[in-house]
Length: 386
Ligand code: KIV
Ligand code: ZN
Image 1 (cartoon, rainbow, N blue to C red):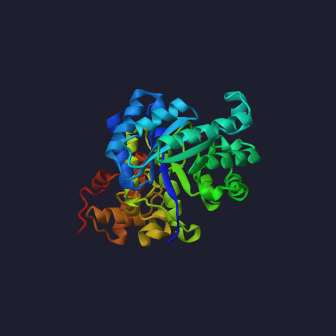
Image 2 (cartoon, protein in one colour):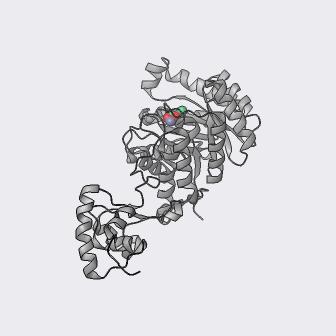
Image 3 (cartoon, protein in one colour):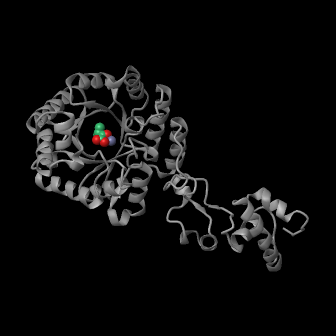
């Protein structure tokens, strides 16, 4: 048994902040149920103070989904916290995720205050949240760019105040994997009460490093990873749940991590979120993109047809994808053409295949992608036995 990593999904909060991705309460419940079936440990269901609709969605989710902890976001303000507590009142297990800026950029330019005042506000927020929910998570916003020693003071202070989880977000997606890993290690080694809470990784993808950064945090002591389905989220998005979970799964011997995720649900939930949020998944997206298990060059197709693992590190069935596919283009070879023709009923001798392949290349140059109906056209008039 490896070290248990808690998966915190924020599709319905950080993900839903994306313009055009807003969901109504019914749709949010559908996603929350799917996240429950997927096996996430914590669902961040919304930001109740932000709107009556979001408040209501959090209430309805707590009534319908009972296995995972349901979490709500707040600023470090008493009113926000009390409203979130009210929205979470029916939850079997409730969590408030409260926090404030930790970098000098945020403290001086956004919050226009001092480090000492920030520490006081942080402690007060955690104490207030402790009164209204079962668990409190504190986020040190923009921790990626915060002064390390001040960040350690902040983490220590909020743990002393009762925080169960402390989130170290790379809010701007600025960090490199080893820097973020070092930051987590520094906190693990320099915060005297660190054994009383767990650290969470929350990464944004501005440099395309969110998954790598999350893994670096986990290998240096973080026990919770925060992510969204399809990596949706502010700007370039958040850590993609499917990526970080499958990286842990594919490297479980090296990393020694386990999660509660049912991998077979990854592709179905990706489709669900993409459809409801009207946010297309890029074709080459790892794990869930439509080309993630498609092979199109002749060399790859030949190897794949001889032995799947020559060009696939994940069995598509393991993540709930239909099956691997062989895409026929002008870069495909004889092996792929022969395989596809056999699948649709044409068994060719070597000479017949050579002839068909020449015609196929002409066709593929024109069509870009050759479908089964085009192959039937190619074969029309020619009688090849099955
Ligand atoms: O990116 C971030 O800092 C956040 C916090 C609200 C946790 O989303
Ligand atoms: Zn975020």
